[in-house]
Amino acid sequence: MSYFPMFIELKGRRCLVVGGGEIALHKVNVLRDFGAQLTVVSQDILPEIKQMEFVECREKKFHLSDLNGQQLVVAATDDKEENHRIAQVCKERNLPVNAVDQREDCSFIFPSYLKKGEVVAAFSSGGQSPLVTQYLKTQMVPIMTDLLAKLAERLGDVREVVQAVCPVEERKIVYQEMLSLGLEKGSVPSDEEIMQIIEKKAQMQK
Image (cartoon, rainbow, N blue to C red; front, side, top):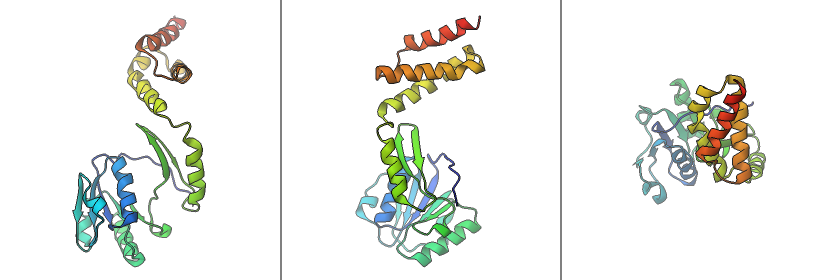
């Protein structure tokens, strides 16, 4: 079964990770990368997790009350039955849940991803082959550069100006010219260069 590639905002959202070992550590790092407000519940939690800022650690056995107020859950214990139980309760409560390495218990999966600034590329094989997703990720590394992230941010900054000046059918062309210029230069176009592109297109419409 293919998974729908939906990107969601996690910044400030309450996310629960049940488990405190190496697998839980990996999931915590991923969720922190996207600004989630994390709670970790386990009787044994790695020091690396406990030392993290802005991560609430509850060193105890998981209880259903730990789900209260959470918006996303990861079951990452070393007990498959416990992960299954957590997943079932989450599904009953319509909580997105990932039970690590238990595809049938997951309502969402973690893709392999690359992140540069606000630009994110994610890859999934539907949980069938991590090797394939890792290959795709490796192929994208030369393309996903810091420059690309800066260019995306710059294009976002001038979006209102482009929308105000250029007709709908010309906007994509304007953005393409800005992106191409930045990639050719190897740097973000200056304000002057950007305005020249915008004004050129605006003049052509008169």
